[in-house]
Length: 208
Image (cartoon, rainbow, N blue to C red; front, side, top):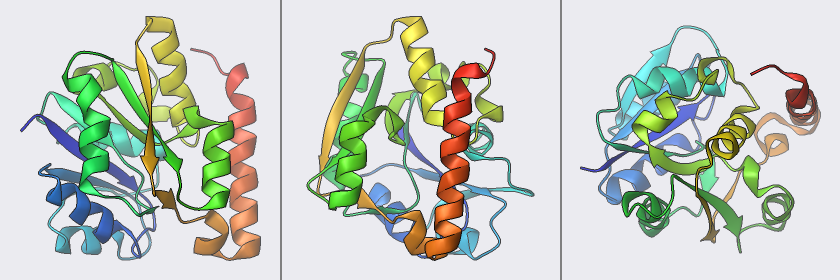
């Protein structure tokens, strides 16, 4: 098998099983890095037949990816968010294809034709997409990976630019994700989003 699907997840018990199932249907082994979830994310992932790496405390998305990578034994890795809607096996195969064929060092999937809110966000900031494929060794070699939180995608984008990677952006037709306000309620979701935007705005002033 060429690639492993790696899914960092924090409190995603409602959607994780379906994302795992799609990845397995596509023929890929799946590793779920449970980032100190307080719900049944790990149990639901295991029930869906994913290999689960449990972090004892929340370390952020980059920390979860770094820990999950220790369980990846394939030359390529596909990163997926745990809250995707409308995902199908052909999306994963299309995402991996340009990297596996040597046409790009990283492929980034952006939402299209799914839900208006997520489609619009992807049009404005496709480089923030969490759906990516790249060589496992390349991902392991990204400095600061284990310390990244909401800014993981910016870290990967900046690293790719510095290294002169060829990056292919691919539309994922019909795919979207659950909004934070839907998962946590309007107020908690809004506050969570503000924290995320604050971290993204601080990113240009980080070292590295």
